[in-house]
Image 1 (tube, rainbow, N blue to C red):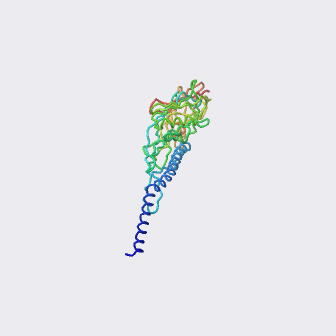
Image 2: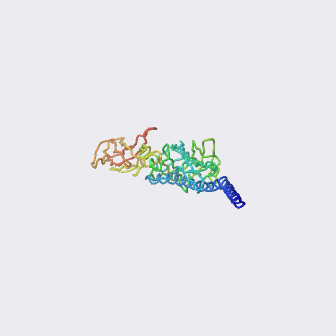
Image 3: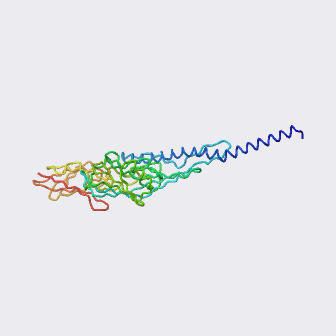
Length: 353
């Protein structure tokens, strides 16, 4: 072999060696660095998707209309010619039980207990990355938080206390209104001191609650899996509800009645009530009417006028209405709905003539 041939072989070997070094170097440092940059964008998109999920749940509760929710289960890595990169970063999601109790309250509109406990679900989603540690995001009562930081959502918004919760065992791309579409009720502190909102079963880390307190200015007490948020005394619109990941869910049973007509009237009096669930949202229920003394009750059923004496069960619906006529005197008329627990909820009307 002549010198020129040997030189060509050596040059080729050097080029192969150099290419190998460059390839190995890029595979060792370049690909991870490139993928880490992609993972940074994935994390931003993941956080944005979770914030949008919380916002969509709140919107479903406010409007009472089903809506699609962006719930991604993977985020793709970029491709690099000649190099193998991971296919996707996977998202694992679950829901978990939380109990929210709002205490030291009364309402100028509806007779309510001093303390109300509502049950629903929180959401935990984790983005599992290849080159970066996993990122977990929590959603509870509209609050979106990471491991150490409050990202979005406020229980107190202006003059409103908002407690949007989820329902269902697994995330889906469709949210249905299980308890939704209400206008809320007015509440006030019942006694001196703050209104408190306690979340039992919280998985949001303590540092994130510290961040929430700093961002909102609200006092937050944290203990194990429980957190208590203190809301200053005042008058607020209280809105709550359930956005369900399960379609076709049965509406919640009735728990309250909201009077649309005065509680004191002259005969013939019109009694009209809205039927509300435990979250104070519209639901369907049969309303019972009964008079303490003789009376005549008239209502519409199947487009026909029905006339009965002294008591009646009005057709199930979100609203129930009837006309009550009495003889001279004063008659107490009780409207009520049967609740699953706690006995019936009643409203008393005084009809005079």
